[in-house]
Length: 252
Image 1 (cartoon, rainbow, N blue to C red):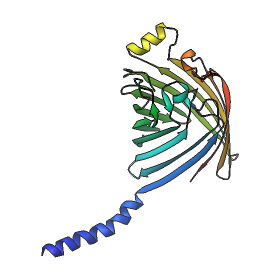
Image 2: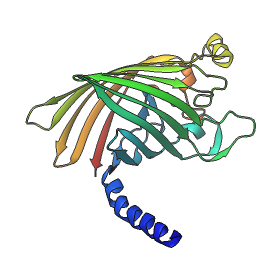
Image 3: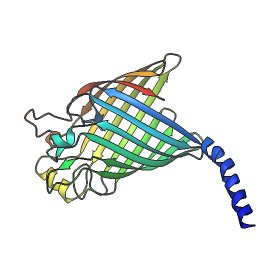
Image 4: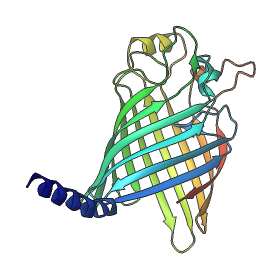
């Protein structure tokens, strides 16, 4: 009798697996950018970066994903002897209430590498929430602890407004962005008192064109970032400098 029950359970699982698999939708993406800007700050030392990611979305609205990019900012900031990759992992849930779509989740920024003794590693945990109405999205990201190498920064936030307008029958999308990165905690207060306030705002205008699945983009970014965002390399690069960025991406 037990063997029969086990057989029935095994058969049920075998038939259920294709149905469960049908509830998941995988997707992936790859990009080449002339400069990896994140929240208006160059992550690649004003150099080109290769990026890519993989996502798995469930029909319920839940999703998980991983995304990576080549970087240099961790070494440029003097935190590491070598740390050339950012690898992010995230999970969340998307849904809608009437005409308003929402997205909530958790994001972990990982920066594997060989670090200088005594520094605060830039690995960061954030939770986020976003709402979208028509072409406008408002999003808030909240730091759960150390933030990008600044210790004791729990409660720091990044607030942003994004607008994205697809021009009908052209494959062209125009966009606009405003964001404000605010740091909290005693260490960031000390940086501010020393004239290296890590809090700043960033602005961006963008346009992209879809060529049969290959998307070519151009964006111009502006920030009021302080000297905190200057590399310690001999070039002393201003990582928050105003700049234009070209990108070529493909989603699968």
